[in-house]
Length: 282
Ligand SMILES: [Zn+2]
Image 1 (cartoon, rainbow, N blue to C red):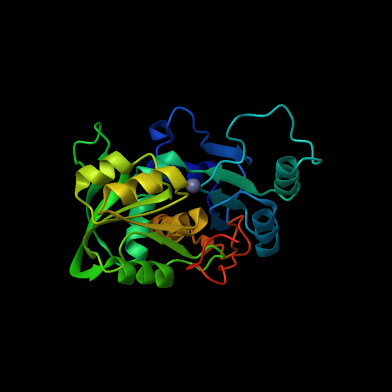
Image 2: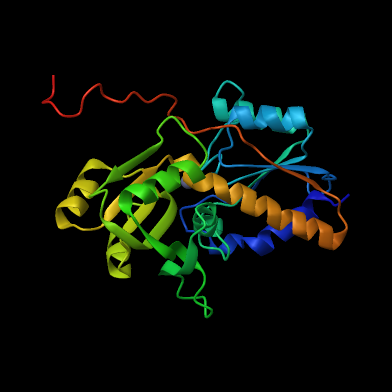
């Protein structure tokens, strides 16, 4: 069995921590570098349900996309929910490692996995990383459809392809509008509207879109917007990352057991469709 330090070195080669944004907090949160690793669990969020799942599974390492402590802390006391996660992990010798914005911009990265879930053909990054001579790394992806469709049909495809959440899929724009070029960005994508417009995309698939930016895009026309749950847009990365680690494990003869959590950790837990959306507000 490999040591944690060896597995982390392999993960750091996939998602070099120095490529994370300056504000980000990536890397190993807890874990003994000399401990042996036999079982790994990939998940989006380092929350208690995932720590409990790792414990039940007998995992030695959890790899999450989101950081546990993004802004630092002065306490890991178990009275706080984050401290409780730390206590659960350390008590049971489970390490936690985070790959966040360094996984977003990687090749393949979070948005490649999102595009892959919908069977989209990736053409280029939406915002290329200028330090990458191959032009493959960067934020978001621009994709082409081999068979053009409509915004309504594309949204239905996203709803069917992404893991189910209470939110489902929200759509802004004319459902009959033709779609050939698609921009995707896993996670919050509303800082990327300028790049999306410049890309010539017919639709932008992302998460966490807000009233005013969406209203402006719709007024500006004809770009369509497809907004999925943040968790759902990033979950496909877990499967992609697990497959990458599986391949590394085979190459090194590590015999790692690699799992992907199917626990929905999107914080939104229910969605009620309004009885009628035709009338005025009650
Ligand atoms: Zn995210």
